[in-house]
Length: 124
Length: 235
Image (cartoon, rainbow over all chains, first blue to last red; front, side, top):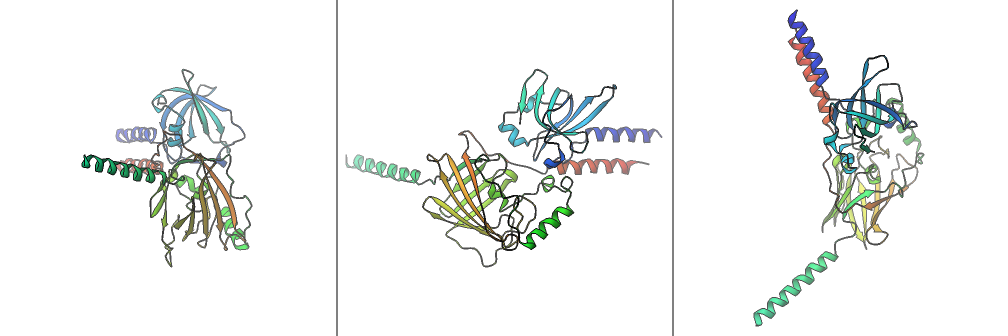
């Protein structure tokens, strides 16, 4: 029994540690008509990579619970050229993400800009 | 004294030779960025043949645009789509006597344009096809055949696709590059489709980066492997 509980804890830990999967959504996955969809929360996981970068953001809800949102954004190559400072976007940071909401009601968004706690903004 | 003169003459000859080589650097060489503001897109309603329309309609009907998006699986569309540029990713053109090499950062695609050569009688089908080229003045004329049939990407095409490109620097001072692309594919299109793709010179300090695309797929595999291991350890 104790082993089962330990296994359950380990499984939960692995899921929590598991990197975000192969996120790359076609633009049709997002409502591109809405460009000011905003989420404020704490970064749990972030990876700058190709074809799209990925982030998981823990967002507080009005009822006191939280929701983990999957956020997709531009490729690491393009972000580098646009001056994003990756050392300043880390797990544990409080940030505001702005972009397109999911077109199908998922807890997902495509991010076009991020505002750090000190007001610094990186865009596109 | 004679030796000094000979040495001076040699140095002069060498500098003239080097200068003439420097002048010969073709204007299309360098790093370029796609310029969407001036470029044309492949038509949304190209002149499909009946067969071409059937192929495209069937593919679209059988693929979910979100779940079955080839981009999600790091699928590079190859030619002719890649001749139409790729988002904001740079393209580096390297010119040598016998080959022009076009290095596209997006998906790390490489095109080799063989100069002073002809196509093989039966080119092995590849995504970027087999390209031969020649110079028409300062314009590089590229002829590509042997392209593997592909229905996704901006230009759905059959293995009969034939692409002719005329690539030259425009606007004076090498500030822009124009690729006039003509796509002929009798299986898919009832006539030739011409598209103009412009590039602008990349800023001086631009450097090409690698583009590794499959890390997410590997992350999925690793997560699944870890989950399987945990499952196997259950009593």
